[in-house]
Length: 193
Ligand SMILES: NC(=O)c1ccc[n+]([C@@H]2O[C@H](COP(=O)([O-])OP(=O)(O)OC[C@H]3O[C@@H](n4cnc5c(N)ncnc54)[C@H](OP(=O)(O)O)[C@@H]3O)[C@@H](O)[C@H]2O)c1
Image (cartoon, rainbow, N blue to C red; front, side):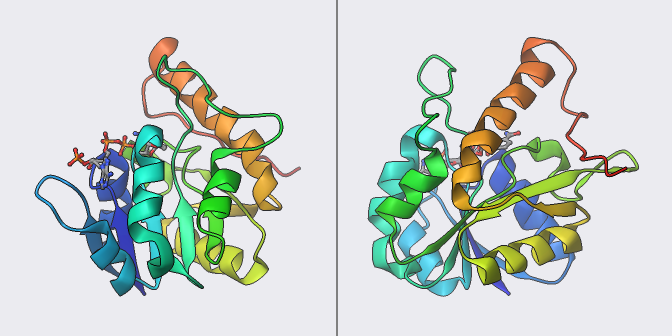
């Protein structure tokens, strides 16, 4: 598949290198040096948003209709200016993205995994769970399949509004890894008894 990744930072490059390894084509949209997100989004079959939360609105305006009918993966965590969860209870970053890109098929994924583990879906030998939420069943299947190819154990987390739970999970991961000093070689794994 042709996957456009908006944001070439830790998350963008991790996912991009993993997708390239398993045979997909990747093109980036970023600012320094300028590679227009709109051009990348027009090219891609799938578009991954991997920019800081405070830049998501700018990216949405820029890519706009280029993502109509396409799968858009929201990999962001909704981190506010003081490091707090910026949205919750009655909406989520992913649902707001869906409102801004109404004809796209927005899927929340990757946000509960540290960038260091996103290219393989593993930490050491341990397979991590990929929690995937979205309202379009086919889009969700495609994203789950891509994440399985990377090495994750994907789990269907339900409709897009489940991002209200996945986004706080992402924040807790940051807390555990950085705030409580556990480092980035940690991750979530759903145990099925
Ligand atoms: N790091 C993690 O472990 C992790 C894990 C899960 C989710 N996330 C989430 O994933 C997102 C990206 O995190 P990151 O760690 O990859 O951040 P990062 O390393 O700071 O990279 C962010 C990238 O976004 C680009 N960017 C910013 N504004 C842009 C715009 N308007 N148009 C195009 N590109 C733009 C930046 O490019 P310039 O520098 O050129 O502006 C940079 O390449 C965040 O929402 C974060 O919360 C992070």
